[in-house]
Structures are given as C-alpha cells and as structure tokens.
Image (cartoon, rainbow, N blue to C red; front, side):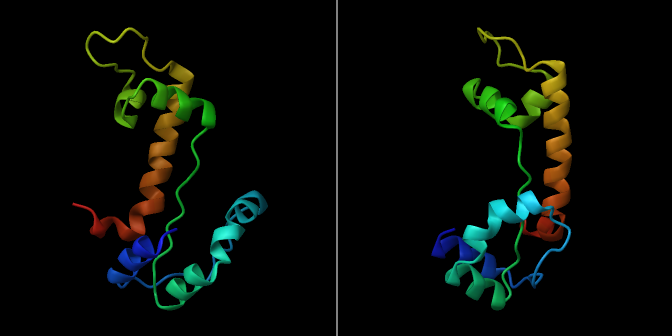
Length: 115
C-alpha cells in the first residue's frame, strides 16, 4: 500500500474497524505483513477505512486476464465480437458471479465513494 493510497483513504474520513474478528486463519496469515506496517497502522489509527478485497480463484482470474475480458463479460459468458477464443465456461462463470457478489458486499461500507 502506497502512501498516496493511504492518503486517499484518509481523505474520505471513514472510521476504520480496529480489527476484524470474522477472518479465518488463512486470511489473517495472508494479510499480516501489510497490516503490521507502521504506515498502515498509523493510517488506520487516524481513521482510514480498511476494505478487504476477496480473492478470486487464480485459475479463473488468469483466464479472464488472458482473454482480456471484464468481469461482467466473464460472468455472462460473453466475448468480444470476432474473438478467437471461447467464453468462460459455466463453472468458472459461477465462480466469477459469486466473487462479484463478495466484492459488492466487501465494498458496501464505502459504496458512497464511487459514482
């Protein structure tokens, strides 16, 4: 996390939770390095809102990225006109759908920041 992004979080004046108890152990292990950093802690102490982005299965993520699709296209099984590749398959589409719902829930506390 850069100082600029921390500053942008602070500008919104949101109140951060001091900690989240509903993370499972893996989430805690994955996040400890950044959250222990003094710059991060100072930003949180000053009221920065922490938003945890849910993870998307790496295989699905890599396919969407390789095909240069947006997540809505991946969810809906769409490809650009004339694309030489097939759309994302049904199971992976359902994973994208679930992930998008998780993203919406994760960003709900700061939804008013977005147009």
